[in-house]
Image (cartoon, rainbow, N blue to C red; front, side):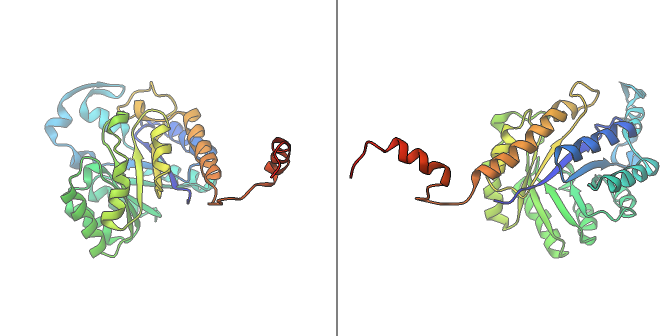
Length: 280
């Protein structure tokens, strides 16, 4: 079994602070993740004026606009992220939520794109992503089979390589809602690689997904689950990140290769001792 591509989803858990973002990137690198992911939105496109002007208390002000703008990184921050990740030799990418954000990310020549579950129903946006022919992770949370069919067809039509990611879009997700059997069902239906994007507490469900042969594993990460933000409670702190990565390595090591009837060298003296009273 191949080790999956491990994605540390920072998203907006940086709370608009580049220092927090860098600490999260370093934690991901030190824990053994392959890449880190952010989210990029053009606030005026993704949210309507009434929503943005609505009251909302946050560390950045008293309206939803203040909150959304406070959480959003722009070019200055992404330039720093790009350099910081290059220095640490860890890949980064971002899930864009609109075409303007997608165009913004083009300047960094990233190795991956990501379709967030919310965006899988936007066919025009999917086409724009697929036209770039960059390997794309497609999350399937909140999606019908028709939604997934249409997304897969768009990427195939544009000859853009992709994989699906089984996902349940609740934060945090209840264990009984995980329905990991869907992973193999997606493989059978679409004949493609399938990963898992998890929003649960702990690592047990993610490790169960590993044993189904996922090609990628994405988990939200945080410095502290009690921090401000809707994604924080469904995220892994540093200890959880290390536990996940170490457990994956141990499980893959333990899985080994089929060897019916093979006695390993360390067993031989024990077999001799414990079977000494047996005569055939």
